[in-house]
Length: 270
Ligand code: NAD
Image (cartoon, rainbow, N blue to C red):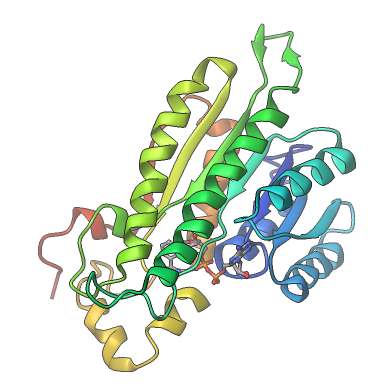
């Protein structure tokens, strides 16, 4: 165990599946205390049980919360601070891509509003209550600096690249995450709070695989992927670990891409 997050208090949203599940396991493996949050109670309980079995010395707490509701987000941060005494890392990772999300002509307003409330407002609330909690972290006397914290917001490659396979509300929501993150990073830089986005490429997780529910839909994307494959959730979790740990102590306001080269691609290899 290399313990890159030894004794850090971390909160991960969307901890019941995909990137959030892998990040929860990885953060625990690296010595962090983990507050596990998901709207799906069964899923978050499963993650909690898995961590308790695999890492008996690690403290984790399962919390059911809907990140689109301010009171829920306030409560989940409070429960984390009550349990562990502080908050060092906030991974605002929960998000949805609705199957009825489409182009400008076909997307219904209710799909737009639902997507925005989880993917954008949820990240806003997460940042707000994480910043308030991190402001209480003590000054590191050895460095004369505030210990602050690290906030990671999950955006997406679709915030950077246009796609002719539309999901307009989702794309717009992830663009908002990138823009919001940059500005928050600047506003809070002198408080020692680092705030970064992580931009996953297309991954083999339920979120995308449920959306690409035929081989034809998968093949339509695979031809554009430089590495010829979808990414794995653990590969994004490793990027989040870097941003969470002190290894990234001089990294803030960045759009950290874990996309297999997709956003640098003109023509893919044969
Ligand atoms: P996933 O569907 O496997 O997991 C998402 C988790 O978030 C689920 O457990 C779900 O219950 C939870 N969740 C959904 N709404 C919530 C809410 N309102 N409050 C709390 N929890 C909620 O998805 P994933 O692929 O792991 O995606 C995680 C993040 O990565 C999302 O923000 C997604 O947009 C982003 N992303 C995914 C891909 C991909 O290809 N899978 C690509 C780019 C970005």
